[in-house]
Length: 102
Image (cartoon, rainbow, N blue to C red; front, top):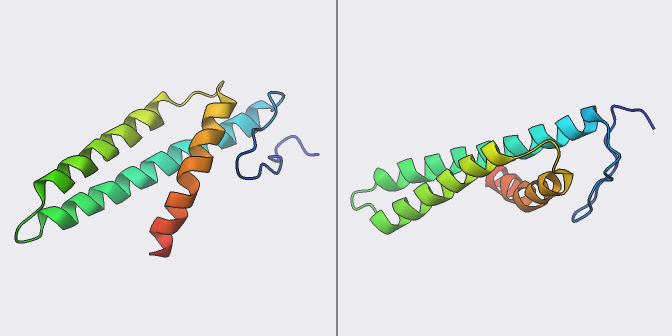
């Protein structure tokens, strides 16, 4: 196996702790991008709600909370926490695919 190629990690699987730095960086960047992408989706949803004639303030506050949580999560990701990175990818990957499919 080439050193810069990620192992095939299916849904719910956790890559081995023996991953090299390139593999860990790829996981970190993927997890960060997913959090940032979904935060951007929440921003668009907030703008859409705010532009309505009668915006739903509760929905706006909920979306703002979700966006803030995603930003915090993105900033708290650690290169050394492979299981945490994989959890973020497994959790947010399907949401990101759904957001782009819509």
